[in-house]
Image (cartoon, rainbow, N blue to C red; front, side, top):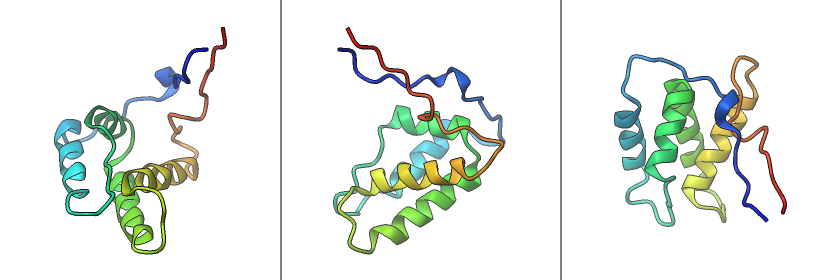
Length: 106
């Protein structure tokens, strides 16, 4: 059995006025000092920064931090990814990277 592999071909790259690597590092810094933060890996964060608008990324981070102050059992990184996914799915002009996951069984 092969692990789930997201089909990333259908997610368009959004060209913006910032460097995705710098934004990814900036967002990852926001996870420091938070217990059980577990930020997403840098490569995944760069992917998110290349494919989604900066205002959605910042909004998702703000929502994740607000949600995380309550009684949340997931890591801040997992809450951030969930919130970003919900924001992206709420827009018709964007596609969440994990919507069309293909699995292969052998």
